Amino acid sequence: MNGALDDLPIELQAGDLVTRYTEWGDMAVRFARVPAGTDMGPVLVGLPGDRCPSPHWGIVLSGAVRVTGADGAETVTRAGDAYYWPAGHTAVMDEDTTFLEIGPVAEMRQFSEHARAKLG
Image (cartoon, rainbow, N blue to C red):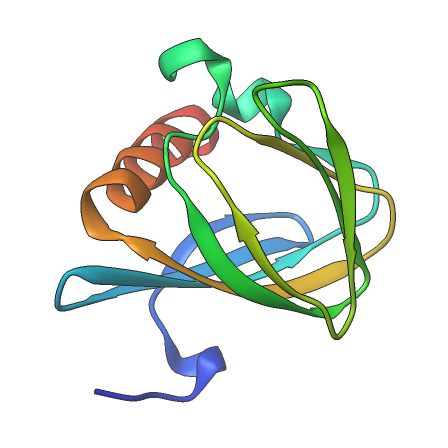
């Protein structure tokens, strides 16, 4: 399966924040454009530990993502960096950021449904 990133189905749209999401086999794909100043913490409230339940593998295409893991360790993933973020993280975008990530369907869907209910 394949598709142009901007043709993937819209998952969320709130102002300048736009995420596109699809499921291919056992994996889900998310393409996101997230504005500077976005803190994912409030969206994650209500999920286990108030953190993202899914691991993600991906690449930051532009901008940067500041991720805090369940252990409190903070890392910054910048444009051109590939990443793996284990489940149990939160994220903040200090600048306009675009990224592509892949993860297991069940966990990615759990976040997706939760976020849509909160922001929908």
